[in-house]
Image (cartoon, rainbow, N blue to C red; front, top):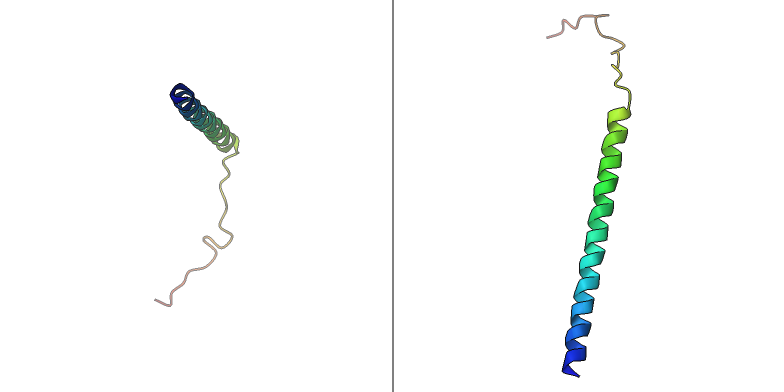
Length: 59
């Protein structure tokens, strides 16, 4: 009976370790995918519509 309890405990620990490893790998893959998507986005310069059109002299 003692051996059964020890083995059961070890199996539970192994399952937990495997689940954590799978979750970590999934998070790493998602991070890499998100980083690649952000890198692939076109870098656009946003024009400021009022830049240079008036001077604020109220200061």
